[in-house]
Length: 294
Ligand SMILES: NC(=O)c1ccc[n+]([C@@H]2O[C@H](COP(=O)([O-])OP(=O)(O)OC[C@H]3O[C@@H](n4cnc5c(N)ncnc54)[C@H](OP(=O)(O)O)[C@@H]3O)[C@@H](O)[C@H]2O)c1
Image (tube, rainbow, N blue to C red; front, side):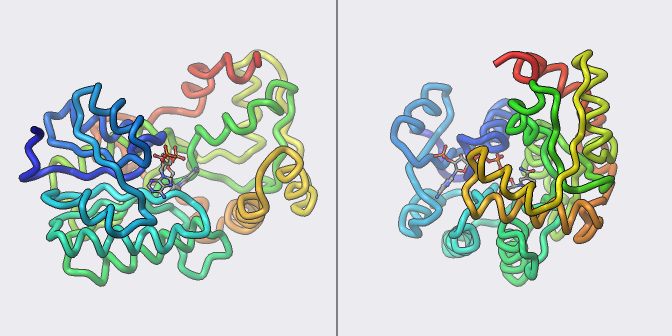
């Protein structure tokens, strides 16, 4: 039986960041418990020698059972209509179970009044934690370099559609976010702190296209679209209305105009992990195949 007297419960444990947090904590010798939505995921995690429990952020009873005995929570909620409620469910379960520390994966552009649902919902969870007696740490990353994998089909054709003009973003690799989360969860000393996390440089979408061209060795053009056309393109290429509308606001309002800290740059990844954050060029090189064949 796994030791359940102290553990870190990780939500989003099967996703891009959470999976790396689980691995990083296990490698550091920390007792870790992965929250999974399906039994097959629980079995897969346990096969890797890590504890896992079934639960859903939309099901408070499952969260209360999952968090029992955990002393720390890494909280990541998935963007969607219920994201705010999911954050509340998790915070309430953590408080009821006597969890001592919560590390919340928020976002650099968190703002409770934002028109972007995945910027307003985490801001509400941040506020809940800040008003609670629990020791909290907020991680607020900029946009992820992995987002460009969603644009791989266009990039393969040499086109990067955008609607943010020359607005800049501190694109960050999820590996660096996970590395920070692991350090914060393991070493302590980050209670009551908000860490804004960025990659090593601020890049506009035209600059991103230039780096894609340089690394891939063939021209990728940034094509600026009016935001209604950008929205229509997102819908035509498979995004649902919720996601497309949020992205339209995000690129037009936050990135193009640098609002809500959309253009912020920090050296926090290096300060916490002791190493430089991964560059956009490194990410492109590692994913060359996705951007060239498919
Ligand atoms: N993309 C960006 O540029 C960006 C920037 C800043 C912040 N963020 C934030 O980063 C987070 C996304 O992280 P990510 O990329 O690691 O996510 P991801 O790869 O999309 O994974 C999402 C995870 O959430 C789980 N999940 C979904 N609904 C759930 C539910 N109802 N109950 C329990 N678990 C549920 C998924 O489980 P299943 O495997 O079962 O689906 C999966 O483990 C979001 O909070 C987003 O707002 C993103």
